Length: 366
Image (tube, rainbow, N blue to C red; front, side, top):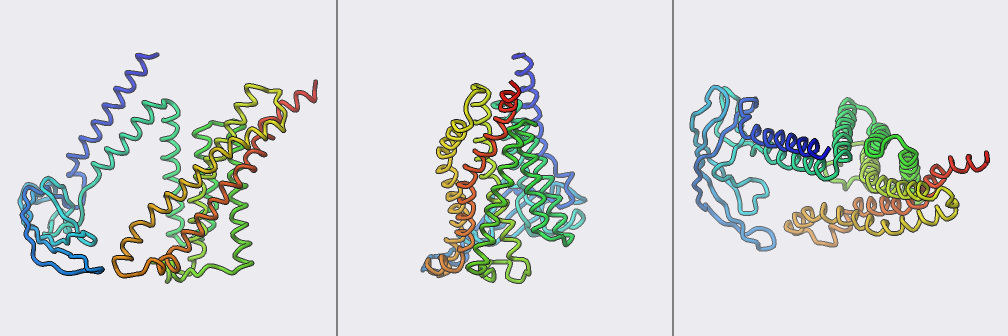
């Protein structure tokens, strides 16, 4: 068995290496023209004071690149690129970069569209999949399957939205499918899986009902300040879907942890009373509650850092950003944190009943 496992790991490592090498030589399969930069010379053209008295430097690059595909394959072209020291709108290119050109395979053009990044993606994604299988074995394989299935579900949901379907209805369906797919793939078809699914759906319903109640009682949010969505008529629905999908992962994590723990307690001690089982599950939930809420806080903070810096560099005051630009993020964080807290008693109660029910029936028969 061990030799078979090692052979499988070597086989997966070989596939991983082949995929990484393939991305380095797959230019012929692209319809967009590609070129590899062979030399770069640059000079500073000017400097200008930007916002908050920061000095912004402007550079011009003279690039020589060799075309990798299309009818002009093998030819060298000269490209001019301008960028600033902040690289907010334009990018600096280096020797050895493979870039997409702005034209077609027949007429490549002489400007750069973007860098070819599939090699980095394959390296990281393949490394993740390889480590999942090598370290966790079968469970890692099921994790990969769940990721693929959830990506397909999300793609179908996005396609339905592009066809004009209501985004809130789509989100309700895919949130349910995400829960079913993820939990069945990772846990199989067991009582703890159904306990986790029921707990997750119940908690999602509770937090959305709580949000709806708060809106009806205190008034809706001012969605007109949502950037890039001010011209859309369904901004409120988009915000609702954001809350549901963002909180789904954290709620599922709490539900799975508590369901697995209560299931293990019952398996080791079938005679444990329902009261003690609920008490044990509650203690486990308290241990993970703080870290899960802090994870949400860190995700919120990391997402806001670029926006904070960009707006403050454009002389928007910090208090203005807090008042007008992030109330939605704060509201989302609070609702999802409430969901994590609610997931503890809901998951403890549901999983305890489901795990203990077969043993209660046996004792009644006796």
